[in-house]
Image: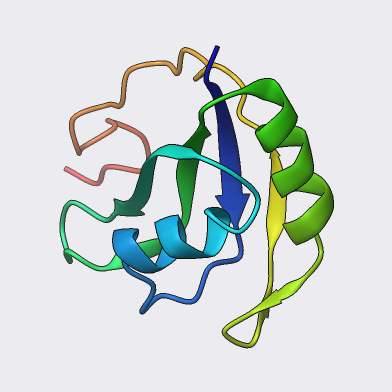
Length: 100
């Protein structure tokens, strides 16, 4: 079964293909995705790699966690499910002082 890994500390110039190629050194990669900022279209400096099996995922963690990649130190661990976040307020919060 495939295992998803969180990869943090990526250089902002890293592409999906570069991330995939780097992690293929540890085994078969199902997918590699850099997370992009919706507003600017730039990388957020982290992404996710889905390894084909648990053994390759563990190998990738031991090979790459704490290692240098493009001048930055990688953080590689098993991805956790996304936590529910409270909804954002729509701009004006209504707080503060009002002088009428």
